[in-house]
Length: 267
View: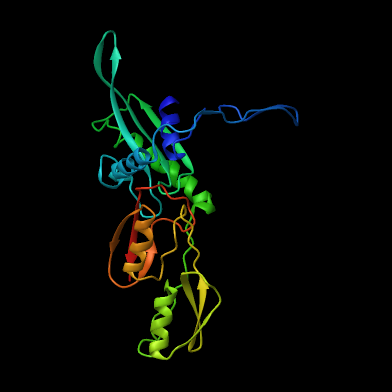
């Protein structure tokens, strides 16, 4: 529980909470007592250290000892553990194996620890024994919690060679392009960053409001615009492909952890 409390604090933006074993005490249908969470430490480390910790724990699953539980539906962050059992004053050939972590890694909601006492067989390491159990538990929770699922945006199909692809970006720059091409465009906002709505052969600008502490929506933008917005908010950006941003790994509107990674897929 102490180990899980620490990892839960990492997932909880550095806020350490005392674990609750019992949620409430009831007498028949009447609740006699409610047990609420107590804060043990409001911040276990600096935001910079926290960002590094999260990056390392995600790396364990993406390319480290627990890469066997990596999946494309949601990210897991955590650490494997394998410890020899101390019996009668000496270390034995028996083990405790464990995996502790949280998910989804980019927007944590659940933390969990799996400890297996004395696993049998040739492969007795945390990655081989405890991590797959963690993954099965996480998969079942993910399948049941619809709020964890990212919404898939409907693909927009543009007739090539008839109307240019204009989706999102800096309003002044996009307006200049439209004016130069003789495309009718109308403003519904004074915001600097906008998304577009097309009606026949006309375009309307819609606000893509930017909040300094929240992940921006850069889908539809050029890589240049996306890098400008994301890096100025303290995020590390990775990307693959070419064209405009089609997908982003962090959900727009989530709180930013400075120094954390966001990946873009262009298309």
